[in-house]
Amino acid sequence: MNDSIRCVLCLVFALVFCFGSALAEGTTEPEELIVFAAASMTETLTKLKDVFEAEHPGVTVVYNFDSSGTLKTQIESGAECDVFISAAPKQMNQLDITADPAVNTAGLDFVLAGTRINLLENKVALAVPAGNPKQVTGYDALADALKAGTIFLAVGNSDVPVGQYTQKIFAYYGLDEAALAGVLTYGSNVKEVTTQVSENAVDCGIIYATDAFSAGLEVVDTATPEMCGQVIYPAAVLNITKHEETARAYLAFLTSEAADAVFTAVGFTPLHE
Image 1 (cartoon, rainbow, N blue to C red):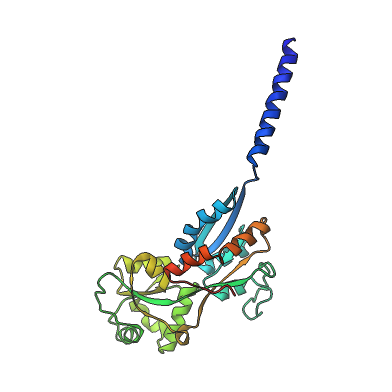
Image 2: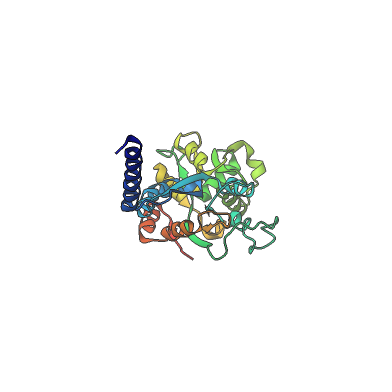
């Protein structure tokens, strides 16, 4: 056998071996699932990432956590996203062609029909730094202290859900936010507000109960639905997804018993509506 024939046979054997190995291993095409989620879900979804990936070999979940308003703007501007989870219905409605045109004023159509669900409910909490230096007792006392200018409060910007819930609480107590400028400090998302409270930079902050739990902060009061409405987190697959089957599977996974246990442990209430 001459050298050229020997080389050809070696190449054939190598190809057959590689092909057989690939079949034996059951290799699948790698897939990247991009999930845009409210910043208040950072801890829970990060914990769930490994579980989902273990159940779906070849899939890598990539998160983008930020304020729901920022995420909505990124989606509208052309960012790649398979699943969107908002901290309030407003931002999801602004992307949903079936929503009230008074909310979806731009007529945006990003939500994949039939996939939208109300995933979770949260609470708007009044949290204080370690030791509660100003001895804040609740929203009633906070309203009086804000009127007197004797307390420094951290809140979310008006374009993020936690800030919008805070504005409703101010309205409930008849507080003029503009008149409180000297006693308020702002964060561009709930994590920034939480950090200000954790670092004792303010006397208290209005955040989500789940963020207070994750940061180990004391909650002295939670807002009632009469004060700011229900805090609902809608979730949906987007119609721009390139991985619809996996995106649907991920959304279904978020309603599983395993996911419910993680959400419940930090203070979320699973809804699955």
